[in-house]
Length: 106
Ligand SMILES: [Zn+2]
Image (spheres, protein in one colour):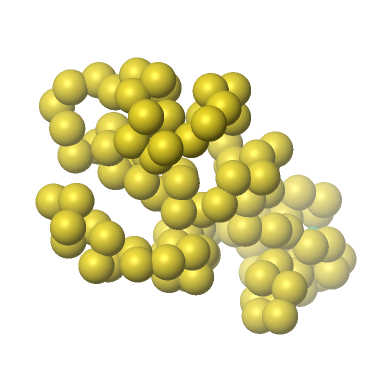
Protein backbone atom coordinates (compact mmCIF):
# COMPACT_ATOMS: atom_id res chain seq x y z
CA UNK A 1 0.00 0.00 0.00
CA UNK A 2 1.22 3.44 -0.86
CA UNK A 3 1.30 6.07 1.82
CA UNK A 4 -1.35 8.10 0.01
CA UNK A 5 -3.74 5.12 -0.05
CA UNK A 6 -2.96 4.52 3.56
CA UNK A 7 -3.85 8.04 4.61
CA UNK A 8 -7.09 7.82 2.62
CA UNK A 9 -7.97 4.58 4.34
CA UNK A 10 -7.08 5.84 7.79
CA UNK A 11 -7.61 9.59 7.70
CA UNK A 12 -8.03 10.07 11.43
CA UNK A 13 -7.79 8.58 14.88
CA UNK A 14 -11.36 7.24 14.80
CA UNK A 15 -10.83 5.22 11.64
CA UNK A 16 -7.66 3.74 13.11
CA UNK A 17 -9.44 2.79 16.30
CA UNK A 18 -12.23 1.14 14.34
CA UNK A 19 -9.81 -0.75 12.13
CA UNK A 20 -7.89 -1.88 15.18
CA UNK A 21 -11.11 -3.05 16.87
CA UNK A 22 -12.05 -5.09 13.81
CA UNK A 23 -8.57 -6.54 13.62
CA UNK A 24 -8.67 -7.63 17.25
CA UNK A 25 -12.13 -9.15 16.87
CA UNK A 26 -10.91 -11.12 13.89
CA UNK A 27 -8.00 -12.41 15.97
CA UNK A 28 -10.36 -13.07 18.86
CA UNK A 29 -10.67 -11.17 22.10
CA UNK A 30 -9.94 -13.23 25.19
CA UNK A 31 -10.93 -12.18 28.69
CA UNK A 32 -7.86 -11.77 30.87
CA UNK A 33 -9.74 -12.81 33.97
CA UNK A 34 -11.69 -15.91 32.95
CA UNK A 35 -10.47 -16.75 29.46
CA UNK A 36 -13.88 -16.35 27.91
CA UNK A 37 -13.90 -15.31 24.25
CA UNK A 38 -17.38 -13.83 23.90
CA UNK A 39 -17.77 -10.16 24.62
CA UNK A 40 -20.14 -7.27 24.34
CA UNK A 41 -18.80 -4.14 22.70
CA UNK A 42 -19.30 -1.04 24.81
CA UNK A 43 -19.33 1.64 22.18
CA UNK A 44 -19.27 4.62 24.51
CA UNK A 45 -16.23 3.45 26.45
CA UNK A 46 -14.64 1.68 23.50
CA UNK A 47 -14.13 -1.43 25.57
CA UNK A 48 -15.16 -5.04 25.37
CA UNK A 49 -17.06 -6.49 28.27
CA UNK A 50 -16.79 -10.19 29.00
CA UNK A 51 -20.17 -11.90 28.73
CA UNK A 52 -19.32 -14.15 31.66
CA UNK A 53 -17.52 -12.10 34.29
CA UNK A 54 -18.05 -8.57 32.92
CA UNK A 55 -14.34 -7.85 33.01
CA UNK A 56 -13.52 -5.00 30.66
CA UNK A 57 -10.88 -5.15 27.96
CA UNK A 58 -9.71 -1.95 26.34
CA UNK A 59 -8.61 -1.66 22.72
CA UNK A 60 -5.01 -1.44 23.77
CA UNK A 61 -4.87 -4.01 26.53
CA UNK A 62 -2.91 -7.13 25.71
CA UNK A 63 -1.13 -5.43 22.82
CA UNK A 64 2.18 -3.64 22.41
CA UNK A 65 0.26 -0.40 22.84
CA UNK A 66 -0.99 -1.30 26.29
CA UNK A 67 1.29 1.02 28.22
CA UNK A 68 1.40 3.70 25.60
CA UNK A 69 -0.53 6.92 25.54
CA UNK A 70 0.32 7.54 21.91
CA UNK A 71 -2.60 7.85 19.50
CA UNK A 72 -3.55 4.82 17.44
CA UNK A 73 -2.71 6.68 14.30
CA UNK A 74 0.95 6.86 15.35
CA UNK A 75 1.04 3.12 15.60
CA UNK A 76 -0.73 2.67 12.31
CA UNK A 77 1.70 4.93 10.53
CA UNK A 78 4.66 3.30 12.23
CA UNK A 79 3.41 -0.17 11.31
CA UNK A 80 2.74 0.98 7.78
CA UNK A 81 6.27 2.27 7.43
CA UNK A 82 7.66 -1.00 8.67
CA UNK A 83 5.47 -3.28 6.56
CA UNK A 84 5.42 -1.28 3.34
CA UNK A 85 9.14 -0.90 2.92
CA UNK A 86 11.66 -3.60 2.39
CA UNK A 87 14.11 -1.62 4.42
CA UNK A 88 14.21 -1.88 8.14
CA UNK A 89 13.00 1.31 9.67
CA UNK A 90 14.81 2.45 12.72
CA UNK A 91 12.87 3.90 15.61
CA UNK A 92 14.75 7.10 14.92
CA UNK A 93 13.46 7.23 11.35
CA UNK A 94 9.88 6.60 12.46
CA UNK A 95 10.27 9.37 14.98
CA UNK A 96 11.44 11.67 12.21
CA UNK A 97 8.58 10.72 9.90
CA UNK A 98 6.01 11.29 12.61
CA UNK A 99 7.60 14.52 13.69
CA UNK A 100 7.66 13.17 17.18
CA UNK A 101 9.73 15.11 19.65
CA UNK A 102 10.63 12.38 22.02
CA UNK A 103 12.42 9.21 21.07
CA UNK A 104 11.42 7.05 24.02
CA UNK A 105 7.72 6.21 23.40
CA UNK A 106 8.23 5.01 19.85
ZN1 LIG B 1 -14.32 -12.89 31.78
